[in-house]
Every structure is written in structure tokens, then in C-alpha cells.
Length: 292
Ligand code: B12
Ligand code: SF4
Ligand code: SF4
Image (cartoon, rainbow, N blue to C red; front, side):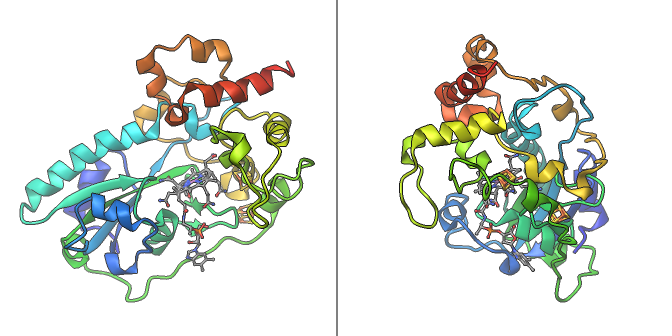
């Protein structure tokens, strides 16, 4: 399921060294509407080119946000990348359509990347690459071009998903089951909630006390996202640094309310935490700043 050399070269020119292609029928669709919006409602895609974008930078600076949110918003990176790559693919194959997606994708991306052989599925729920660890974003380009025409012709008949060694370090580090506030939700998700008063217990559906959600954020000292199940994983001990310049620039590892308030609209909208607007990240920061 490797891409053919001429297709792979397009990605390698952008420093994307991990890519593959899948028969679309093997992919797990999680958002049918998104597929329709991409113009694939009457003609289903025939293939998905799946690739990894590493983002880890060896940076010893103290952080109070997730590593993925330190540089500018990766969605902006993908927008530029897709406009280049889809354009080039379109020129090579004018009879077919190519459309990119990352994160806000119709597909279960970790499943697609694992099927493509780009890494293993960790018990922390993440796709782990042998060199970059789990510090990779996943992107894909969907097309009505058959995967056999995009691949190098050496497809394995039944792709296999490989998993990690189940060392349990991520479960031990994860605060979901053991936080003293009874919040059974991923901390990353909680930091991204505009309104903590609408959060409910995933099993009983009972509403959470928003003050306990605030304590949860405060306790783990994160203003945005959570990396606990990644930082303890043995596969992330020495991740290779990303060669992609976007992730080395304009880095803000440690946020304060003053930094956020001082950002222009344009500067703020380029950050990963902007999709929830300023009040959300400012609320989280004010919780952490109370303890300083
Ligand atoms: C919703 C979402 C979230 C939610 C829910 C997370 C979750 N665990 O599902 C929240 C906000 C909590 C979240 C948090 C994070 N997310 Co998120 N998230 C997504 C999103 C948009 C959809 C995920 C989803 O709902 N999948 C569908 C449900 C049904 O899948 P599931 O059952 O959980 O999936 C598993 C099964 O499919 C299973 N599986 C499938 N086949 C098989 C076969 C076998 C044999 C086995 C064992 C398992 C298996 O493996 C999957 C992965 O565990 C994806 C992008 C996308 N479109 O896929 C990004 C995505 C998964 N997130 C990503 C990231 C980076 C994160 C964070 C690390 C961010 C952070 N630092 O805070 C955390 C990590 C949390 C964690 N440990 O999972 C990346 C992951 C990259 C990677 N290396 O894997 C993705 C792929 C976005 C991207 N394009 O890069 N996320
Ligand atoms: S910490 Fe251990 S169990 Fe968790 S994903 Fe990494 S190898 Fe798997
Ligand atoms: S991101 Fe944090 S809360 Fe979410 S699963 Fe990983 S360790 Fe647990």
C-alpha cells in the first residue's frame, strides 16, 4: 500500500516521509456529512492517501499547553499543504478529483493510518510511528481515482492493524479514572469545553459540577490539551524532531492571560486554541494563574 514513486515524491518534496494509500472501502467512516460536504455524496471515493505529519520539536522550554498547540494551528498548515498537493495531483490526473482532510475528516484517521501500515495503535488511543512516536498528525487525500493506480502495485491483500505492547504506562498516567473530582472525561476534552456546566458523566449522563471540572483543569495544570498518556509512552522516549519548518516557527510554549489579551485578532486566530474563542483559553489560564 505504498504510493508509487512519482506520487510519493510529491509528499517527500514537502518533507512528508510517511505515506500510503488505501482502498476507500476499508476505511471507517465516522462523519458521513463531512464526506457529502467534500462532494462525495453521489460518487463515493475509491481511495484514500493517508500520511503523517510529525510535529515534535526538541524544546526544553516549560509548557502549560499540549505540545501540539505550541506552534501555530496545524489546521492552517494542512490547508496550505492540501491546496498545493491536490493541485499537483489534479494536474497529473485531470480526470479525477482530489480532496484533503485532517482532523475534521469523514474518516477514523488512526484506523486508516494503522491499516496503511504507518504505525501501531497504542492503548493510549493514538497512532504511534516507529521514529516520531505518537507526536504526529494524520491527514488524508480522498479521490475517485482507484488506489491501484496510485500505489506501487505491491499491495498486501489484507492489511493488518498492529498494536502496542500494552505496558500500561499510559493507563497509569491518565487522570480519567483517578482524579479526585470524579470527572470521567478526557482532560484534553474538558480544557476544550466553552461551557463546563453542560458536561455530563459519559456513563450515567448526570451533569458534572462545573467547579469540579475547574478543579480538574487546575490540578493537572494544563491550559489546553493533555499529553500525559503520550509523555510516559516508551515509544515517545526519544522522538525524532519534525523536519517541517511550520512547527519550528512562532512557538509559544507557556501561555498567560496577558499574552492572550495582547494578541491581535489575526495572531490569535492562527493558534490551535482559537477555535473555542478567547474566553475558553482565558478561563483555563485564570484557573492556573489563581495558584501562582
Ligand atoms: C474526537 C477526537 C478527539 C476527542 C476524543 C478522543 C478519542 N479518544 O476518540 C478528544 C477531544 C478527547 C481528543 C483528544 C486528543 N486528540 Co483527538 N481526535 C478526535 C477526532 C476528531 C475523532 C476521533 C473519533 O471520534 N474517532 C472515532 C471513534 C469511534 O473511534 P475510537 O473507537 O476512539 O477509535 C479507535 C478504534 O477505531 C480503534 N481501532 C480500530 N480498529 C482497530 C483494530 C484493532 C485490532 C484495535 C486494537 C483497535 C482498533 O483504534 C482507534 C484509536 O484508538 C480525531 C480525528 C479523526 N477524524 O479521526 C482526532 C485525533 C484522533 N486526535 C488527535 C490528537 C493529537 C489528540 C490529542 C493527543 C490532543 C491533545 N494533546 O490534547 C488528544 C489525545 C487523547 C487520546 N489519548 O485519545 C490526532 C491523533 C494523532 C495520532 N498520533 O494518533 C487525531 C487523529 C487528529 C489528527 N488529524 O491528527 N480527540
Ligand atoms: S504507554 Fe505502553 S500501553 Fe500505552 S500506548 Fe505506549 S506502549 Fe502502549
Ligand atoms: S489525553 Fe490525558 S486525559 Fe485524555 S486519555 Fe490521554 S492521559 Fe487520559
